[in-house]
Structures are given as C-alpha cells and as structure tokens.
Amino acid sequence: MKKIVVCGISNRALGMFIEPVLNDFHEGNQIVGLLDVDPRRLELCKEIYPVLSNVPVYYPEQFQQMVEEIAPNTVIVASRDNTHIEYILQGLANDLDVITEKPMVTTAEDARKVMEAEATSAGNVTVAFNYRYNAFHRKIKELILDGKIGRITSVDLNWYIDTYHGASYFKRWNRKRELSGGLSIHKSTHHFDLINWWLDQNPVEVFAYGALNYYGKDGELNPSPTDNRYCGTCSEQLNCDYYMRWSNRRHSLKVKDDHIKSDSDKEPSYSNYRPDACIFDHEIDIEDTYVATVKYDKGAFLSYSINFSVPYEGYRLAINGTKGRIETTEYHEPSRVPFPIPEQTIDYYPLFGSKETIHVVQSKGAHGGGDPLIQEELFLGVDPTRPYKILAGAEAGAYSIAVGEGVWKSSKTNQPVRVDELLQSTVIKDY
Ligand SMILES: NC(=O)c1ccc[n+]([C@@H]2O[C@H](COP(=O)([O-])OP(=O)(O)OC[C@H]3O[C@@H](n4cnc5c(N)ncnc54)[C@H](O)[C@@H]3O)[C@@H](O)[C@H]2O)c1
Image 1 (cartoon, protein in one colour):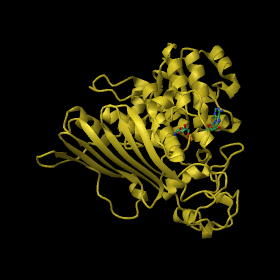
Image 2 (cartoon, helix red, strand yellow; image 1 turned 180 degrees about the vertical axis):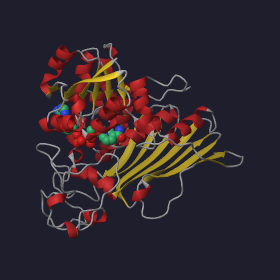
Image 3 (cartoon, helix red, strand yellow; image 1 turned 60 degrees about the horizontal axis):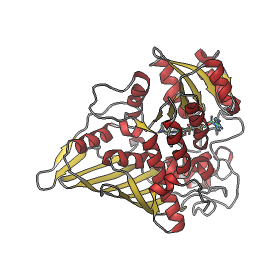
Image 4 (tube, protein in one colour; image 1 turned 120 degrees about the vertical axis):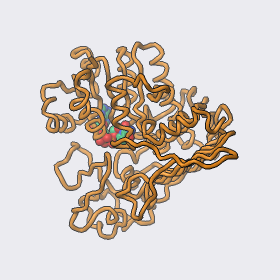
C-alpha cells in the first residue's frame, strides 16, 4: 500500500493526483497527510473531497513531524516550483519515495543536490513528465527505437503557446524567476525532457537568446502604465486585447483549459494571492520568447524556440537521422484555434524511399492522454508489457533543468553554457 502525503495542494495536485487516487486507484493507494503553506488550500481540498476530512494537515515547517506521526512511504510534491526542493530532500532523508511535479526543482544546483541525496537514500525520485506519455510522443519514441531514422543528427522544435495559456504564466507566481525558474525551466523542462528522452543523448552545451516582448511593464498592448491591477476587477478590461480575446462583456465565456483556474469571479481559493494579476505588472522578471541551440553528446543538434504569445497553440517538430526523418505538427487545443486545423499525424520519410503517414491510436485525457497513463504507472506500477521505459527519474529531471538554466544564462551572457558545469557548480550567479 502506498501511504501518500501530498505537499502542495495546488490545482495540479487536486486534479492530477488527489482526485485519481481517491476515485480510481484507492485500492493500493491511500492519502494519509496533506501539507501546504496556505490554510485555505487545505480547507478547499477537504471541501472538494469530504472523504479526506479526517486526514491530518501540516504546514511546511512540520514535514518531519508529519513523517513521525503518520509514517508515510510516498511523498507527492506538487507545490510551487521553488519549494519542491525542500520536500524532495526531506522525503529522501527519511527514505521515502518521492513523486514530484515538473520542474523537479528550479536550479541546476538544486538538481545536483537531489541526485546526491537520492544516491544515499532508500527512496527514489520520480518526475511526473506526463508529456512523455502522450500517444504521439510515445509513437515517436517507438519509431526511433525501431531504428527507422537511424542515428539522430538534428532536431527542430518550435513550441507556440497561445495568448490565453501564455498570458496565464504572467498572471501568477510563475512570473517571478525566483519562484518558477523562469519559463525556460518551468515550461521548457517538458520540451527538453522530451528531446533528451527521444534522442537518448545527454545535452552538452547550450547557446540561446531570450527576451520579454509581450508582457511586463513595456508590453506594447498595455492599456495604461498602471501597476498592480487584477483582471477580474480591472477598470480597463474593455481596452485590454488579452482580456477581451478570452472573455466577453457579460463574463459568461468559459475557456477550455486543463489546469488554469481564475479567482476573478468566485470565492477565493487562495488566502493572500490572486491568480489573475495584470500581465503588464512591473515585477515580471522572466522572458516570453526564446531561441536556443543545444549540442548533444552523441552528435545531435537541437534547434528550439518557444513563444508565449501566439494566436494559436501547438508545436512543429522534425527529427532527422542517418536513415530518415520524422515530422509532426500539433495544434494543442482545437477549441482555442480560431480556424480549421488538420488532425495530427506523424509523417515518416525514409532517406530515399516513400513517405508514410502514421495515424496514431490516441487515448483520452489531459495532455494528449498523457495524464491518465502516467497516473496508471504511478499508482498501479509500471506497465510490465511495455518494452521500453517511460517513467522519468531524477537524472532526467536534472538534465532538463540544466538545459533550461543554460538557455537563460546564455541569453543573459551571450556566451555558450556547458551543461556539465551547471550540474557541477555549487555557486549560481545572479544575472
Ligand atoms: N505536468 C504538468 O503538465 C503540470 C501542469 C500544471 C502544473 N504543474 C506543476 O504543478 C505544480 C503546481 O502548479 P499549479 O499551477 O497547480 O499551482 P497552484 O498555484 O495552483 O498552487 C501552488 C500551491 O503551492 C502552495 N505553496 C506555496 N508555497 C508553499 C510551500 N512553501 N510549501 C507548500 N506549499 C506551498 C500554494 O499555497 C498553492 O497551494 C507546479 O510545480 C507546476 O509546475 C505541472
């Protein structure tokens, strides 16, 4: 039996872990403790899931007390990114298994600490990289493992985040680098992990540019240079293109999204925090646009870009190898793309033969069916029939973070950054 404590009663924790454990995986899994810094989150969790009403609750400084009182064997870490490190290290120090949301931590230095702690602990770290479980992403892994494209030489990945989803990062805690690591870590950790996993190569060196083009105090579409506004109560809603694109004057428009919740028009779900702060606030200190080049240890090159204010969401991917090429384009959320879109397929081009178009068998659920599948692996055990491994550990978490940190540092210094130096360094400079 997994005796689970959940650290961070976030929206993600409620939907991704607590709800499925209670409803689908209760036979071998039990939630025995809840921890958060905010009493409202603990209360909200019990309001939503009354079955947890007698489960003890704890605050951050009570982690050790929690372990001694309720003897869990598994910690789920789904709190704000910069706090993951506290619970991962304390979990490992108590020989507990740790399942952490991405990004595992927010700096390469902390990633190294996790790997060192895991090496001397009876507990293991799992990073919940759900994108790996998306049906298209698994199929790409299988094509590569089958040798269809030979040795991988280069990858092009362009990721586009729409003006609804992209803006959401700038309304919430994610907008502060010290809390999220910035978007080259908070968001791109998914993408760098996918590439690292598909390639089965380790990143060696990163060069990148980054900029804040749309959001923050200099955002061109800011209706006025006022600070500290909140979307739900802002007197300039009608003049804000970002607000009006995804709302209407009656506030009746509901945008379909997996995990973004707004506090603007209902009972607050956090004590001293609103997730609808103005995207043009002065305190925003992260970038919204990156391009990067990454070199890998077995010879592959990655050309990556990400932009957080695009009219539609999705990605374009091409993977080239010595025997062929794979291509796919995803339009993330059909309800948020304002024009007809083709269904996603994977095109496979042998170097000299005929092109094949693969119609991938899809599964239901958030993140392209990835969330339900990873939940099965986390709570029922790894699928014994699958011939290759998907579930990620601390090393994968660390490499994806180191690439993201390298992207940010390179963009600030205009110099290439070595990934091994990031993972070895003990002092992180402040740029
Ligand atoms: N894999 C995915 O697709 C995916 C999707 C969304 C979020 N996430 C991850 O899930 C986590 C939660 O994100 P969210 O957007 O749902 O967050 P959220 O804003 O809904 O909640 C954050 C929670 O952390 C709590 N918290 C803050 N400081 C804390 C501390 N010191 N100790 C304990 N709790 C603390 C807050 O009170 C709040 O309950 C993040 O790490 C995020 O990156 C992953």
